[in-house]
Image (cartoon, rainbow, N blue to C red; front, side, top):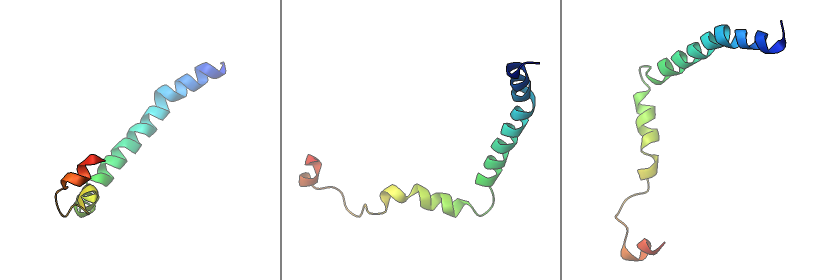
Length: 61
């Protein structure tokens, strides 16, 4: 069996299972209980220093 066929067989079988398991693990980690506060805080990062609307002099950038 040449190298290409061996790697192709591995990728078609076990690597697919490994990558699917990693995908499901990341998905479950994201939706775990208690993570909504972290995601809400991360989503608000662009708006943290947005206390007032931009003035006309700031539009020129």
